[in-house]
Image (cartoon, rainbow, N blue to C red; front, top):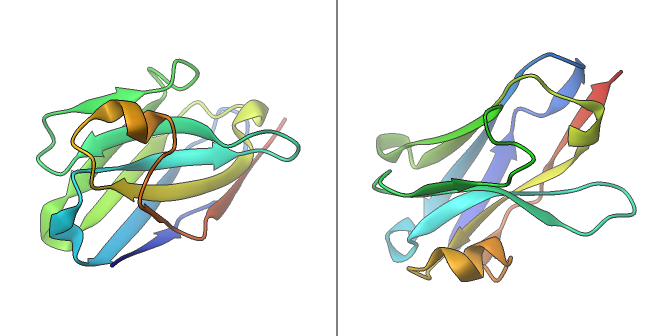
Length: 125
């Protein structure tokens, strides 16, 4: 089992920045990808970004490219999501997720093995 705990959410004005953290524990060596999804009220959960633990593969949703950066610290088993130039449309509950799959496709589709409880990000206009 793998446990994921998110932190770093909060309220920020449009144009501001936040950095989310996801601390992974347990059998993290069984996972290949780790990433972020988000879900806004009344909307479906959507893919935001992913990275593999070696840092050689990363992917972003078109809506966040150029504004968000995903990174990882293997020594701390922690993944970060640096969010810059935030917009009100970025308001959502952000979830950390981890997958044992070695392909990005199921990860982007949300077919992941482990999920955190989420951290709220609210961007005011």
